[in-house]
Image (tube, rainbow, N blue to C red; front, side, top):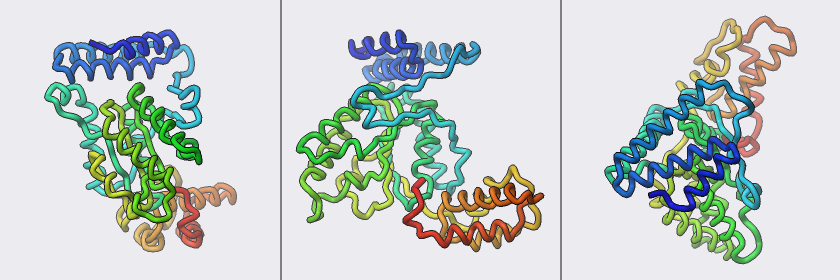
Amino acid sequence: MAKAQQLKALLQSHMEGDEARFYAIAMQIAAHEAKVGHGALATELRALIDEAKRREKRTPAKGPVPIVQPRGELSSLLSASFPKVRLADMVLPQSVEDRLSRILKEQRQLAKLRTHALHPRRKLLLLGPPGTGKTMCASALAGELDLPLFVIRLDGIITKYLGETAAKLRLVFDAIAQTRGVYLFDEFDSIGTQRAFPNEVGEIRRVLNSFLQFIDQDDSDSLILAATNHPEILDYALYRRFDDVISFALPDHERIVDTLRAKLAAFRKEGIDWASLAREAEGLSYAEVTRACEGAVKDMIIHDLPALEQPLLSRAIQERKSIPSSTCTSA
């Protein structure tokens, strides 16, 4: 049967009108029943939840949809949102897209896998240069699964006081267990650096040890994602804690063309040589190509031009290439 804490949280979320949290806890209960071998009950609970969601969609909304917002001390450690991004909105190599699609399939069949004592992939390590889609991947997974995205604020977790950082990290993992969602540790190398590095302070080493313990103990239904631009400095013990390690790379010629076409699809264009633009944009990340497109569109609008032309896009690309990559925000 459901744990007392889950039942109390279920009633509390209902009283507060927090539908997203209510459904998340209900799914946790269903998953727990499946885990302990009550497959028929788990299937019935999941069917009831799905039917409730369908009825809710048919009922006109009376107000804004509530978002699961962290409260108390958690509000300084997590930021919450409900992304609308989907996997189809991303331009990805087929190999990466296939792996993400498999993760989504396993998550959507969570209860079914639980009845066979199997666990879906849900602890993911995302590696790659800035601007290659790691953060957007977290948003897309949350959007596809209709789950809230929680971004862990590492600046709020790491402190100079002995033991305080580990205590805050415990709060985060308690939230991971209580509220199903997608939890993103961005710039993960700030706490995942190799413990053998001589310049690492003792507190960071203790934080990494705590993280390893917490992620080993975690058996929730939440997805835990860790993203880094610097995989070479991650502690080796981290890799085996994750169900999947997905590498993101700078776009190749074909992906650059796909990105340019996608970002400029809504605008009139004249005399565009996509292959030539892609050659010019080699070395840029997806985020930088996107910003080049946005810059060209702004120039077209500001100068009242009838359409986007090759020189306008070429100039925008060269402007992006003149900016050092380290100044670009990761995506």
